[in-house]
Length: 259
Image (cartoon, rainbow, N blue to C red; front, side):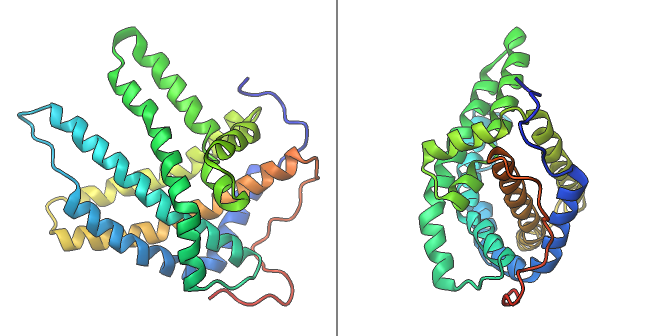
């Protein structure tokens, strides 16, 4: 189930990562600006609206977790526009503010809904105890990896909520371990840097926390979006039986430069 060999060769992992880095370098400025403009509003809202847990009332931790999940799902929904713009920039196509707003309206609600659905196993996991904890963790991880291409399916193929889950589930089939490894390669540096930044900013004022969170989001989200774009396209290509192709970060000949 986890490691059935795919019917067609995939792009080697080093090549895929190198292509993501090259495209990230080429499109960083416009994607950074787009992400920061959104992240500033999201970070401010999160800082103002997210409740603080009460140590004397452990039940408040569940309420804080639920609120965090909602805010995270909102962030995923709105920031799906970064993936949309990354796809345009990769093809050398210009984008406009009107187009970006239309993309948020078109893809945001479905990305939000999918993220909320994927958060349900988290609450099941927290409610598990004893002998059920480890199987629940394994099942949750399995589902998350199989559904990890949900947002690219929505943005790149305009899939419905159900269609995006089915598409991701199908594309990752037989490639679970490879997908998990690739996502670890991307997630671990971000996780470590987040912990380091959090430790350095312990006790900092709210404006400083919002500013740093916005800056970090502007740096991380474009790369995560580009990586998801290339991984999704590579799996689609392999599933269609097309041989591996060049994933370079250069736009087509004659294409407009990123803006």
